[in-house]
Image (cartoon, rainbow, N blue to C red):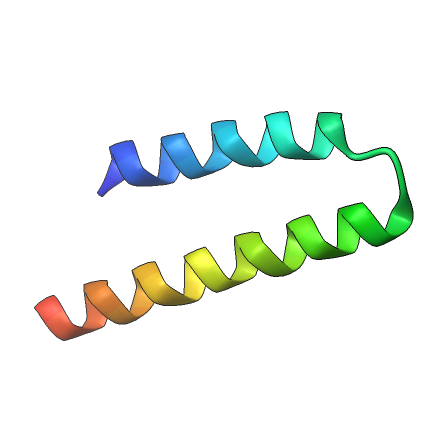
Length: 47
C-alpha cells in the first residue's frame, strides 16, 4: 500500500511539473483524484 502511495505521489509531482496551462493542471488533478478514489475503494473492499 505504501509503495502505491509513493508511486502516486511521484507521478503527481512529475505530472504537475509538466503542466503548462491551468487546464492541463485541472485535468491532472482530476486524474489523480480518480486514482485516489479507486485505490480507496480497493482498500475498503479488502477490509
